[in-house]
Image (cartoon, rainbow, N blue to C red; front, side, top):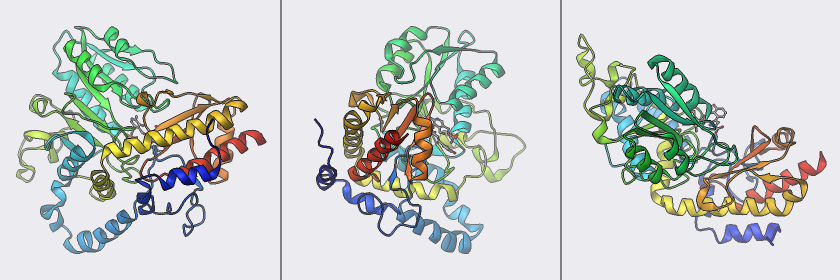
Length: 418
Ligand SMILES: Cc1ncc(COP(=O)(O)O)c(C=O)c1O
Ligand SMILES: Nc1c(O)cccc1C(=O)C[C@H](N)C(=O)O
């Protein structure tokens, strides 16, 4: 039996070693609704896995940038520091949250565009007998669509792994899907619908044993679950920065390319910023050595600023402590669901074992689309994903147990009132 009282949520917050970090996020101080937040600030925000809250430090950072960097240094800023930002921030992110040594992570483009660039480069580097790309049917739409496009462009075949929407891809399924015809496998570490956490090291090993490359989509993992790309011998990875990294709407994505692959991969969008000598402006494209070759055009500098504060915070707190809080939050949401929502017919559409779950949980009921619309009207913000899924994203650094309690109570009351 879970203690469903609000006092219990307060006790969990009091015992939470990460609780103080919540007040560093704009509009999220205190427990539950922020006392001094602008009108319309959510009572409970369960969508940090779609768009994270801003850190107050980022508001200051962006304002200062406008005044002291763009406004003052103007074009000189490129030489002084902006040109290197994709690599400087990439290295910071790699160190703080991806287990990636310097020189392998870059910030730029959207996840969709980086995914295209790396997947095209990977399949073009495969031998002529490797004409198959393996992907799961429940991978995020952009991953599936990008691969459909690449397969059509390159005359390749997609091999689909069937996955239940409340589960995720297993090592056994990947083992059965790969072979000596496989060029590339593309999977998400945390499934966007169910929150299933894939066994990245084991699956990576299986793909390598078949002689193929693997790309991991880390959109729903970076900043919420431990990632150890170098130690796991991952080939390629991409991910969003506007979710658990709080980079802001449309902030540029990150790409990881293992060092020893960088010289052999040719990415398809050959732009001047990826060349060996950008301002030589030579007659033809000569790719830069190293990770620079994976960028194409001018770095989106303003969009890269806010994520710096979260990356610094992750480094300060440590991803292990963040994961512990994340597990405690999802366990608490599931416990409240068992007490309050299961009797109303709600089912859990996420792994119940915390070791197999990322930072969000999905609760299923035929009325969830309608419930989500009503919750939004009441400033309680989860999101809805077919079929029937209320997705509850619990960003570990900015979410309190009291916020979970308030939001889950609102779900219960909304469902009851239908
Ligand atoms: C798992 C996953 N992959 C890819 C994307 C696409 O990212 P973007 O729209 O920034 O290209 C998202 C989010 O939108 C996502 O959740
Ligand atoms: N990128 C988004 C957007 O521009 C609008 C609304 C939602 C998003 C998201 O990121 C959705 C998210 N990737 C998902 O897992 O569903």
